[in-house]
Image (cartoon, rainbow, N blue to C red):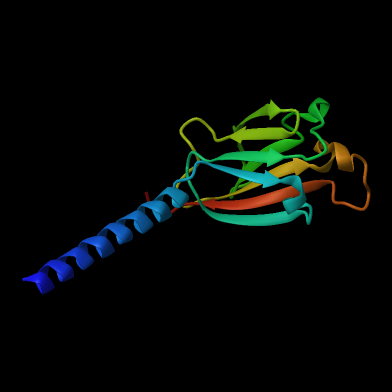
Length: 144
């Protein structure tokens, strides 16, 4: 009888631990925003995959954001057919840019490119040693 209780208790503990681990993985996959430091994309390009359809991008500029340059020419998203995607751009604080998805979200299983002008970063305005714009290539999740 004691062995059965010990075995049953072990299975319950393993089951709860597995459920907690699965929930944590699921929550990471459904995360709706990504915070990226401008320094992480300074190489001109980065790639992200399995992005949720309602994903928001937060770009952090440690030396500040050039708010005079915030417009559809300096920040935009292009789909895999080279069409502009109607995203919403806003300033969360003097150092953080927020890019919200189009109403209805991105399309499932598609690829996009987010472009950011180099001169948005107060630290790198006019720095000819860096590319004129940075690209974040991302693809959305294939299933929900």
